[in-house]
Figure 1 (spheres, rainbow, N blue to C red):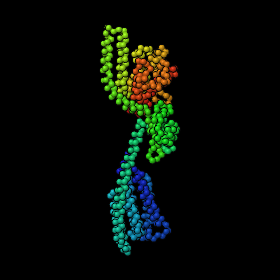
Figure 2 (cartoon, helix red, strand yellow):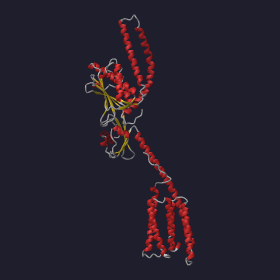
Figure 3 (spheres, rainbow, N blue to C red):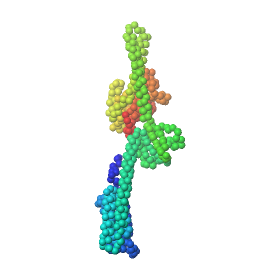
Figure 4 (cartoon, rainbow, N blue to C red):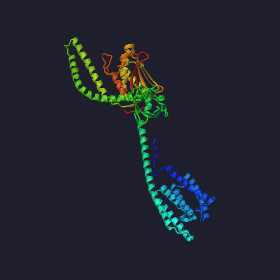
Length: 537
């Protein structure tokens, strides 16, 4: 979500109307004091001494106006500028009349006008400050002149009036400079606030889009933040803030406690509850506090990155192998073929030529497999609907192997189960696994029976595909080395079939594992990529 735009030239209403509200509160206090002085028996001679009636009327009207302004500020009507100009001008007029009723400039009430001019200058930065000062200076000059003309007995105080007017202009100028600096500071603060908000939003977005899981816990091992990748890796729903880490993932909490005791201790891989994904956590102290930053990595991604580096090196190696071996191998095969066509060969020599031909073909197969491994980065991910795709594969496989289609059972639950995979590479993987399954089933039970079962766990949307045969199974000793290159139990095998199948799965963010089947045979499970995980090809 994006933060609403902030106009630094028009600050939010909270920053403009609140000072106006405080200014009017001051006006209410002054108006209330004048009303108390006018209508009480305090007998303060300096207030309203020369014209008590005028003082009482102005005090009452000024209090009513200030009360009315409290409602207009609350309603925010009329506009902010109109209310500022109106209130400052009313204050200047009212205080001038108070001053006139109390004896003119000598009463000292003219100092209150300075507060009004200063407040208006701060709230309305710009030329309005000088307008207020000029209006106040002109008004007190008129008041003093009128007082002199109407009462010749009063002492002339034009010098004091001029000094008061100069004070108005000085106050307005100073307030204007301060208001300008305040506005520049507010604008700078607003820009910094926008930059910080944008940076925070960008940081949150980057963290959420990261392939690596990220979580933050406090000193009491309570969760503060967790990104989407971490939720998927740990197979959890979005937890509430301050949830104890032990309630979210006990294995991760246990490793965090070990790290807290000894930060140099290495982390260990583990499988979160109800998840087939193997993860590796890393811990780091966050800042100078007691918060802990946790990075959670998918070991499959790490293996894939290592595999990409390995394949890059292998690609450079196999190009030289192809030139160095294929040409002499081709010459050997051609020479053997010419020798086999000779009519003077005895039975023993014919057998030797067959051995040469068989082993030449085997060596050529090894070279082809190695060259094929060097091209594993050419993966084209596409969405595959498993049920129709597997039905088509089984039909093609049965025709190529010349076996009855009913010998291969297929179950897909739910029927609309889908995954993302390179279809040509998935075809190669299944061809290899099904070919091995048919061969072992035939040798053990005499029937080429296979079961293909595609589904997903009830609490995990990650799809998987089981290839189950009716063979004798694999011993524990052999199962440990099953996916190692060049490991085979067949005399004619190259030992690269299962290794290539596993590498192809890794290139598609999937996993290939072996499990003993319930019927005593072998079960090879392809666990496809988690559909909730963000991933790159």
